[in-house]
Length: 274
Ligand SMILES: C[S@@+](CC[C@H](N)C(=O)[O-])C[C@H]1O[C@@H](n2cnc3c(N)ncnc32)[C@H](O)[C@@H]1O
Image 1: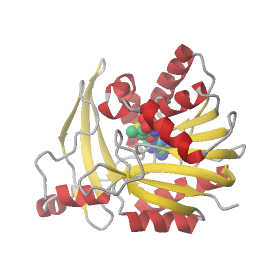
Image 2 (image 1 turned 180 degrees about the vertical axis):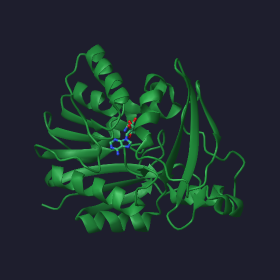
Image 3 (image 1 turned 90 degrees about the vertical axis):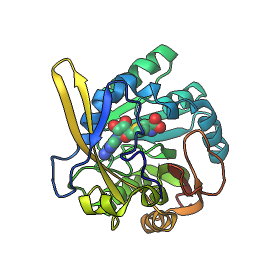
Image 4 (image 1 turned 180 degrees about the horizontal axis):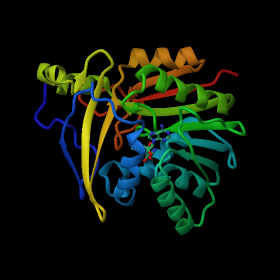
C-alpha cells in the first residue's frame, strides 16, 4: 500500500497545486471538470503523458485496420492530439469535448498543422452523433471516469458508452483507456476512506485543485473513479460491445500486455458486433 503522495499529481502543475481533499458528502455543482480543463488547457500539452501521441496513433491504427478516409470519433478529445495526428494520416476525425478551452487549443493546433477536424463541444453523457463512425477512441480519461460531484459513477460512464456505441457502424472498433481501480485501492488508506477522500464502494477519489488566474485564485473540487477489469468488461458487454482485450494502458506504455497493479491506466479494446 502506498499513500506517500496522495492526492495524485497527474496533471502538470506549473500554476496548479493540489491542496487537499474535501469530504464526498460536500456536493458541489456539476461538472467542475469543464472549469478545471478550461483553466488547464494552455499548459495541457506540457503534461508528460501527452508526449507519446505518434506512437499511440500507430498502435490505434494497427488495431483498427481502417482504410484511409475512414471516420473516427475522438470522445473527450481534449487538445486534439490524437485527432490531429489521425487527420494528418488521412482520416476524417470528429473530436468531442466538454471544455471550450481545450477545444480552442485543439482548433489552434489543427490550424497550425494544416488539417481539418470537426470539433464539437458537448458533454459525452448527452452526446448524440449526427452520423455513424468507422471507429472510436476515448483516451486518457476522455470524459469516462471523470465525474461531477453528484453523478452516479455507473450511470455517468454507462451513458458515455451507450452514446459511443450508438455513434458507431456495425463492426466498428473502439479503444478506451481509463484509470485503474487497483492503483486507487493500493494507494489510499483506511484514513482516506474515513475522511471521505476515497470511497471503496465506487472506487472514487475526491481532490481539490487550486490555480492562479488574472482574476485571482480559482479552486474546484473534482471526482474521478477507477475500474477493475471485470466491471469494465461487464459495462461494455451490457452496452452491447464485444470485448477483445483488457490490459495495461498507461500513457507511454501501450501494447497488448498484462495490467501492472500500480499503473495509472487500463486499456480495453472492443468492437460493435456486425
Ligand atoms: C485528460 S484529458 C484527455 C484528452 C485526450 N483524450 C488526450 O488523450 O489527451 C480529459 C478530457 O476529457 C474532457 N471531459 C471531461 N468530462 C467530459 C464530459 N463529460 N464530456 C466530454 N468531455 C469531457 C475534458 O474536458 C478533457 O479535455
